[in-house]
Length: 433
Ligand SMILES: Cc1cc2nc3c(=O)[nH]c(=O)nc-3n(C[C@H](O)[C@H](O)[C@H](O)COP(=O)(O)OP(=O)(O)OC[C@H]3O[C@@H](n4cnc5c(N)ncnc54)[C@H](O)[C@@H]3O)c2cc1C
Image (cartoon, rainbow, N blue to C red; front, side):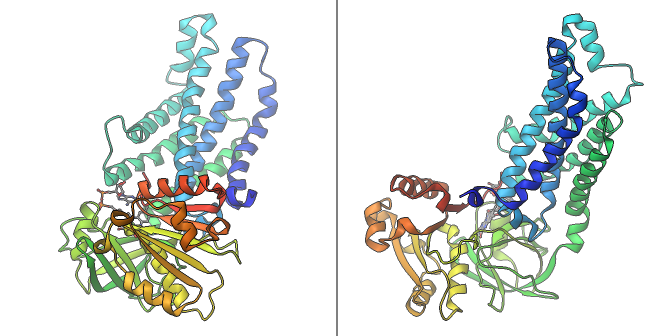
């Protein structure tokens, strides 16, 4: 059970908070905790230490190294942690500034202001303010106060995390009792940002070429890609960042977007299926054969194949069918697939299905793969009775789902009510923000 919720990488993240706290512990013990001033000062210092280590962790988590993400349960989980840890860190850093001034407020407003705004010669404190100003600039819009931010603008704003990290380190290192820990964590955080923003576009990507664009439905294409050099290794259910360079595209040229791989590792071409969901995904529907793309990955740990010998139950709807197409294609290669899987393909009606004929063909040939189609317009929301009829042992399977949020939410509630443990349910979201 613990293995399902905690991933090996989490231990590293916990250590990155615990070690700085242990290092500052002796000096914290010297605060006069009985007095309100000592109490608030101690808490504020503790908050500063934990806040900075969380902020540095959030920066490290942005590194996006293939394989490394699997230590943390895959990139989508790492991104969720990145957001949570970044938010907590930011709150603690705010508390740090407030707590330090509050600790002297009993002596009057002037001392409190002096703690916050000392003479300029106390430059480490001003570095702290600079770090906070950068943080507010790039984290503020994430709170959606001004509405939903365009993803590309949000990403550009995030570059301010680099000067924020440098300023935070310049604030902390001269004041720290054990500066080496901040040198170490700071180097890892800055290294991660440099890799992601500077090095990975040239060193971490594979060169591919579009060799086929197959329209599956209006607004949905499957694009086949052939490596121009070394091919990327991947597993079924993983995803990539795709950057097109076809100058004739009306949008998204040179922009990276995440797409799930729909081909199987044994296929000749790497394939992704893209639904028109916005500017870039609309434009890419007309990408030209022969044009160059860059591929970064593969990322994700969707099938969590660390629970072998367990039957699987897959639910795919809309463009969320892609990881299961990859999984089914992969099974088609195998004489006897290790983990039998039953796919429930959830669609509104017959006209909105894609890959269905191919999936039916695989189901006919591969005894370990079963397929059931559920049509919402004809049959209404999927029910326990429907699951029971088509897959009687559904409660004992490892469950994977990918599709529109209402579908995923409905299924999760249904399965949990039917007695399936939450830890056996895995789902992929197609939205990082
Ligand atoms: C792990 C994962 C796998 C995905 N797999 C597929 C797939 O197989 N097929 C498919 O059609 N779509 C997939 N998507 C969704 C796809 O990435 C978005 O539809 C696409 O990025 C939208 O960009 P846009 O400019 O067309 O639309 P926009 O209008 O800019 O954005 C539409 C939505 O996509 C999000 N988005 C935009 N750009 C990015 C980005 N670079 N990274 C993360 N989110 C972004 C936005 O937050 C917004 O919610 C996947 C997303 C994720 C996170």
